[in-house]
Image 1 (cartoon, chains in turn brown, orange):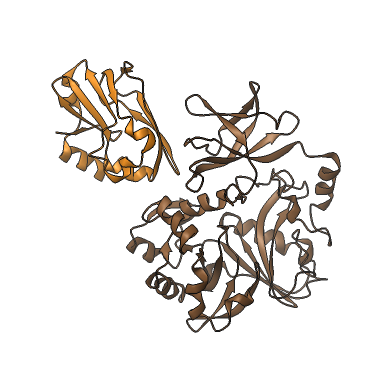
Image 2 (cartoon, each protein chain N blue to C red):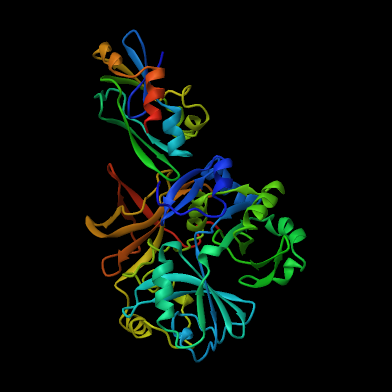
Length: 355
Length: 121
């Protein structure tokens, strides 16, 4: 695993006996004691994730007039201070350069949180829109720890000086943790009550240890992927890519049309003409799991492929998302998923898989 | 006494009946096991060829026959509780085969050779 980048928490993962994998150029823990155990900790108690590989960019300047507001599908002028919003950065064809969350820190400050594999591409893309103000990539000096689960609030409350109930979903606060500047955000990728904590690399290991000591279960990217898929959340590189628009990923409702943005013309054309492909959810009604890349058939004809799939511990069955050709797909019928050996049926489902 | 293949299956032989399982290393690599596709009784077991299929939350893999013969029994219990393999890989058998050539066992690694093999991975 040479040449892989390490987060500020790498030594912690090694000590905890994590099994690490190369992920988007980073040496990241895929699991500690087991995906199912970590998944249960998040659904029933509280789990801790190192998400420091993700990127953080800061903009300071005139939000309405600098060009920055054209970079993504979110209208930063409309976004209230203290709130963040999920959105997309699109190419001219409406394909997705990345999905991201943008924080409105003040009247003239934004923080962009982007996928690890897209940091360089995204930074260049946003920068190309900006004609004034400052724009800085602080990914290498910022750690991100996600504390997720029904008991996360109880655990985090003693560490902050404000009432966590003040934070609504997608609300955040610039505050301190262990005496150091931090952002506490009421967000996450698990569908549980939870917080995303942004802090400097030096303090992150201390915060990690504190939360472990307080009883949080460390959880890896394996559990994180199962948790997000049970909620039907998209993962960049799977449901979204430069070739797949948010409309095709069936999450077009996150796009804000109150301001202009790159890719808008293509998206509006797709809306007008109708999309030719769409991401659909399905379940297997068996313990067999679909996997990314498996081909999907109907009436003996290939209609698409599985973008994400896993076994769901909550549902005790296989769940998946597939990108299918809407002109061929008959939603009144089962789909057939081709396996390494044989095939299995997939049954229409609605999101989230786990409610 | 267990012998191991380089695909991480184990076999133990009593008379001409071999019992197959997965090494704890294999099970650890797979993680939480969720599904096992077992062969039919009477099916041929061909050394080195896929005899069963296993899925975990995050992975899927063939199980390769460490010895040739005919399947005489499968561990049906694993259909409902594949996680037994996670709990005790060495103590959990997957299938039994009436072997056609007992000397195939000698081609498999003993405990210490398998341990040394794992070091090279």
